[in-house]
Length: 314
Length: 79
Image (tube, rainbow over all chains, first blue to last red; front, side, top):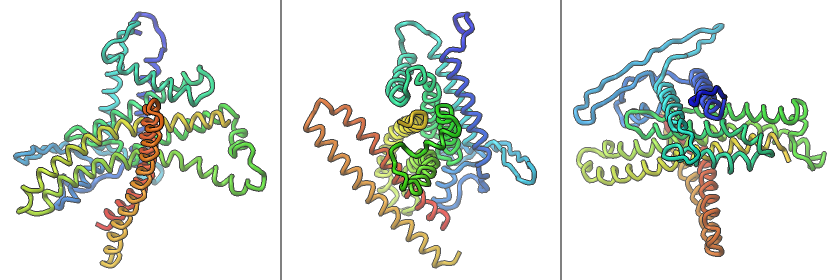
């Protein structure tokens, strides 16, 4: 599109995936988002920590020294579909996801604009990651090169989107959107649907369920293997969701409680606890940076593995 | 929720967290031992071994965090 010729190339497809993925995540988040009922900051330290980690209807910016708070209350609207009330209000995590999706689309569009033969700068960094995804994740898990190349946009989008959502959790005053089980469940649901899609596309709808137990298993083991395999079909995406959610929430919890320790131990001991707490908190933030990248990579790798395994059961 | 079940929930959360970290650190320790031995035998493969070690550690930690989520649910529901 930038060189005058209309083409649906890799960049356009990746952008479409990014928009579609974030739209789906929006929908799944809306169906699962709890409405926080408490005001900004609780009375006790655990209340304040929980308020920071959990999704809420407002964004509060509190000046660290003066303590004055500016609170933006986000619009709430609920719709009722046939007796069931669906909460579609805009919450903190949803706003972060929109901002992250916009930043992602902007950065990759800007980076991929100069398509020269010798890549430089941001383009070369992104190209390194996408090449790694194509060679290590896609081509190793899918049979033919063409099929692997068709799956690279989804895997790259999943990796970059999760990575940037995890990174947003490290910015002050913003929240970790992947620390919400609804968001990670939405992402894992996408992987689950794609697993079924790839399996049914490769083996047919009936054939997929007929071959769900691997070849070479004797017939008397079928009563055990069949429930195990069907259960395994559901537990794998569930594990994906919970793994990402727990890693992100645990990182945040540790840092918040380390800082909260200063307040919880009382007035006299606070100046002694503060240096240790802050030092450990800084180290935990570095660890959280590493975990952000690692968990995005693990999610993408396991997605590629599951989709590849269902498309090629041998 | 009466005081007894509250106290038991907190106790269960604490003991559960301790047990799960026991299992995780034992598993990752064994993994690190195997990785060190493999690297000592063949230093040329240290890059591949390091990558596999990090991936396995992340998966083991994922399983631990399932248990930790249960403990956190207990502790926060009780609070």
